[in-house]
Image (cartoon, rainbow, N blue to C red; front, top):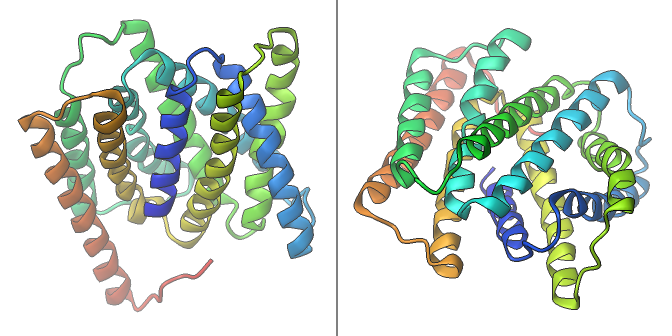
Length: 281
């Protein structure tokens, strides 16, 4: 999850570096690159690409596509850390949905960690007056779509190979978004092409490690680690986009890291208590 979070943070930074390219075009090019890379990985692993539970794979692709489009839109309209802060509502939403969809209950201690982590997220950015209400609603909708997608990943853990789950996201995204992009294409300049290829490459890395994590552990055990992504976003925003870190933000970071560590400790103790070994994807 930490590798995945860092890779996603680099993707998000790259999106901000190319504000001239529309979000739908970024998603289309990213999907094309990921499709090619995943196809070769499937061939090398000798895994059938179409999977077993195709309806759920399609739902995962649709939800993931919605999350991408909406999040990339907010990245280009908000400061990086602000957009990431709103997007990081999805760990809590993921666990809430998992309790209904997958019947995987979180403990009281884990819920307390989730709440503490969310308070930390709020402290990191506070109330940013630069965020328009419509953009805020779009960011929340993106987080909801992400939560649905992550639960689908978890639900597919016993049915489909991680590479197949990864493959369906760019496949569905490309089918859904490329027709619109074809009629509204903005030709990238050479440096924008570099950022677009970086988005495709780091997305592949992020998706692979995220899928392995959700196949290996329940959302209640690992979702809090998503909050560590805000650390990456804050650091990148400070270095590249002159987004300053105030005292409340520093307190939020400590709260995020502490809640993530405590939640993982609780999950580890529960596994030892019931004698359940670590699952390896």
